[in-house]
Amino acid sequence: MLHCFMTYPRPSFESKLCAPETLAMRCAQLPRPLVFTNGCFDILHRGHVTYLAQARSLGAAMVVALNTDASVKRLGKDGERPINALEDRVAVMAALESVDLVTWFDADTPLECILSARPDILVKGGDWAPEAIVGAAAVRARGGQVHSIPFEFDRSTTNLIARIRASGDDR
Image (cartoon, rainbow, N blue to C red; front, side, top):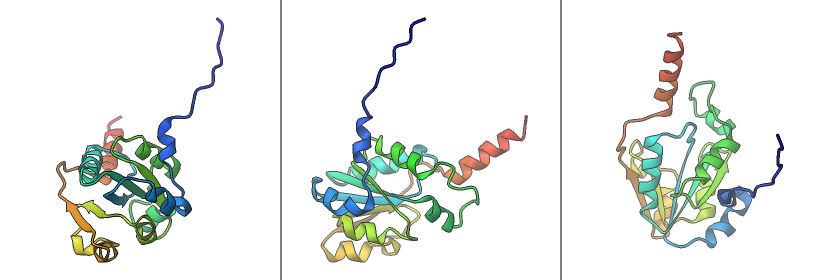
């Protein structure tokens, strides 16, 4: 059997990956209004993609900032989290149609990313009160909006991991 070794182009979604140091410049090139959200997005599920599509519908472009692996660990989640490494999480996030740019942050909050991105609309999930969202004051001070989108689907990565582990006990 003859094997052809072809090279394939890099997936176009990889152009959406943005190092934090170039975030301000890349965001300046995006259409406005610009939406910003952030999170771990460890194991992507229906709740995540629904939330992201709803957030994106609020503007003309959306930036998503992901916690680095070290930042996820400091959040006090399960000691084995994140399940997926940052390089995998940013690639999966970038592949989503609703996402225009993906960056990451190693701090405990995304404030520096928010200040660099200068979004018109700041969004988090329904478990966040708008006044408690990091960066809300800065966005509002520039005339922007802050939204807390109610969960449409009751899903969580923590519960999903627990179900996977429980199903493994039956073998």
